[in-house]
Image (cartoon, rainbow, N blue to C red; front, top):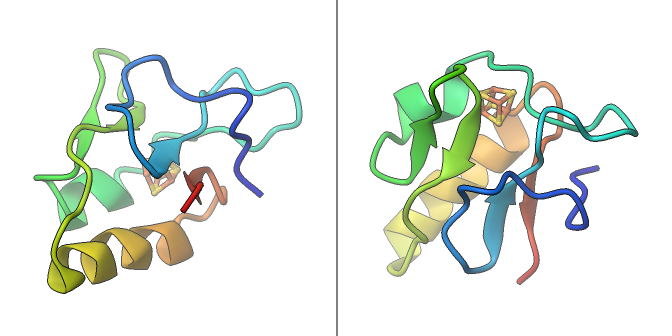
Length: 82
Ligand code: SF4
């Protein structure tokens, strides 16, 4: 599970977030590249290759795209506070 107490500092405010790679529970981003390659308008890569949410989804299609990355993330690092 993603950790909403350890969000990447670059996440734009809103329901979707990426958990920081230094999450003590091991739920952080592992820089696999999946989310920011599949949904580049919404997930971005920081200088070290870790992901953060750069734009929150608004339309149903955008939400589906972001939710798809949440489900695809191999580290379960993406969360949705709803
Ligand atoms: S899919 Fe998950 S592990 Fe991969 S870059 Fe995105 S947040 Fe990080």
